[in-house]
Image 1 (cartoon, rainbow, N blue to C red):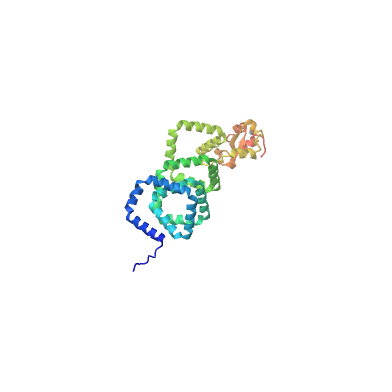
Image 2: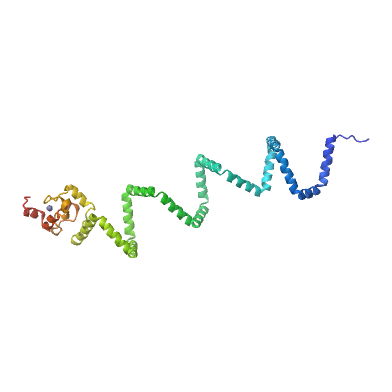
Amino acid sequence: MKPVCTLSKKEKKKAYNDKYHAANKDKAVVYREKNKEKLKAYHASYYARNRERILSARADNRELNPEHEREVTSNWRKNNPEKLRESKIRYRVKHKEQIRDHQKEYYESNKEKILAQTSKYAKDNADWVKETYKAWREKNAERMKEHRAAYYQANKERIQAQHREYRERNREEYLAHGRAYYSDNREVLSAKFAAYRAEHSEQAKEYSAEWRKNNQERVRILRHNYESRKKTNGGTLSKDIVSRLMSRQKGKCPICKVDLKVTGNHLDHIIPLKLGGLHEDRNMQLTCPRCNCRKQAKHPINFMQEMGYLL
Ligand SMILES: [Zn+2]
């Protein structure tokens, strides 16, 4: 008995085609290779003509068969690493702003987490981080220097104000630190200063002259202190002693009451150094030059009585 054919006409045709394609697989490869450009153009034009339909079919397919879609995508990614890389770069260039914003936003809303992760990573890989950072610093030393200098220039006022404020807030510690440092490194520092002065002697002279011109009162005090150290067993004057005495004496010579702004003034030891008076603030007064010259090393009581005052 002749077997009954159960295939429809369409199915028969498909079976025939499949068989034909399987038998001529090699030929097809050769054909495709030979007509690569032509086929590419044809596919592109087909795609352009049917874009909407193709895209919607793909979307449908993604929905209907997500597994398959994922597989196709992942296969494509695996087989086209170069293309994938290029496409990623293109995307990043094109969406630079959005990516930055997104990253910023992500950082802000996950700050705690990110910082914890970073610090954990740094802790777990301490050596590696240290090495890497060191290498980076060495490689970018110039750049860092420039960056720091530029930052300082751009924020000079603020930084200096900060430093000033810090010094004032921590004045005692700051001074103590300076003194300790100086006394620990006295010899080295002295040598350094001496070397600097020797190398910059002209500038130092100019600077010193300028400073003396602008700080005449200080110069007087320093000279006084210096002279006094030679004569007595020490003691120093406050650097603002002249202005303090000036206001305490209301600008007048305490002996003859003349206006010191007119006559000029001399710093006078009330009890002269020769008579055992100390070179310190509370033994100082401002006199007019005339009274100072007349007083010389006399005891104040004797001098005042000589001048006709009854004390
Ligand atoms: Zn006087």
